[in-house]
Length: 318
Image (cartoon, rainbow, N blue to C red; front, side, top):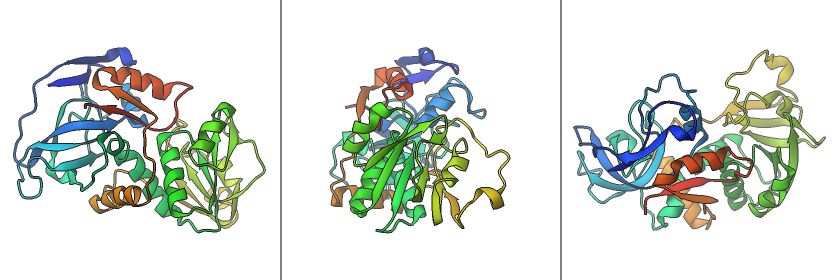
């Protein structure tokens, strides 16, 4: 099979598109023919050597959509079944989705019933699952005004689309370091854009709910913009800072507000099915911003890291 192998951490120049043996199934594992997958920031971190547990060479990729090609559980995962897989140690402890086929633990393969085309399904699993879980943890109400910090990311755009589908009257604002992305954010469903300059929001506005995708780098500033009883959900680490330093909860958690989080590593097959059904029922436009071929995974990484990046980036094997 064809695969993109990362021989050693570093730049995208270390990716090698090559022939490798197709994995052989074993008890408890099944082989998935990959139709498509999303590119994620965590894979960029791993490529750069920021995932200490990952050993090389490795085929990266923490999500995929496809069909069961060979199975060790014909009852639950019959050959030909449409499936999704995300997270676990996929692309980390064992080879992931940057390939034509992927051998996965059966408990990490989730059957789906959907007629959406592969280009839409490939954009959904990790990104929309994360956005959906974050939206639930924020306990959105119709009266809320919401801020998405790091709004131009795939999760940020997905969150806004799901939010507007469920709560059309909610006002949602997106932050970005580039004012040039205002038009893109408005077209994606945001009601306004706020410039984020060196981790400081350039506004006096406050919000009922904040989806924090930048992470620990900007949490303190996000609390400066939270209303009485509001909620901040930390979901992303786009700021490149992994932990909160010198954080006094009594002083920093302002206005009797709440701090929560969502981690997509806690995967629920039922919740995955819910978000796919929601996208279908509400006709949410899950179209990815950019689509690459498997041989061009390096270019997909470069785009996601560029100043031009916006929304979800996927690879299709079709």
